[in-house]
Image 1 (tube, rainbow, N blue to C red):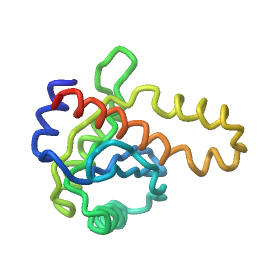
Image 2 (spheres, rainbow, N blue to C red):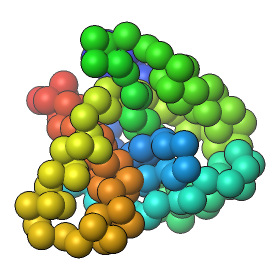
Image 3 (spheres, helix red, strand yellow):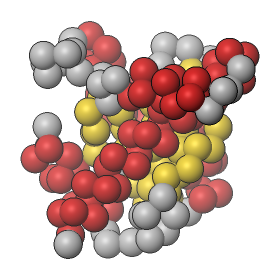
Image 4 (spheres, one colour):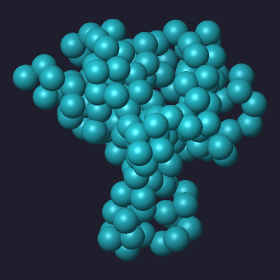
Length: 155
């Protein structure tokens, strides 16, 4: 998985904003890095409707932020294998490339939502606010892990 990630990330260049995506069945969590790729920040949660509308929303966010690439959470099974959700994620990214032609790299997202849920609980965030922010927070968690790995690979 790490080799696949680094191979995909090679197309990003050394600098520029990256968007992190946490694809769910009903929502897409979106996060953004700074141009120097030091910090990932939650951006928004897109309520999924139709693919074209979802892709256009992502394209608008990417354009507005000047994104040069995408980090997409890949929902692997706990044993590291790919199941139907991972296949669906890969398919989404292939189709997205027709509307948003940015390079994409996949990042293992196992337990990212659970980690962010625990973090938001620790911050004493209400249940309603947690459900509102969990997907974009998970996207930030995914993106932060990926940019930390990229910095380590370039050090």
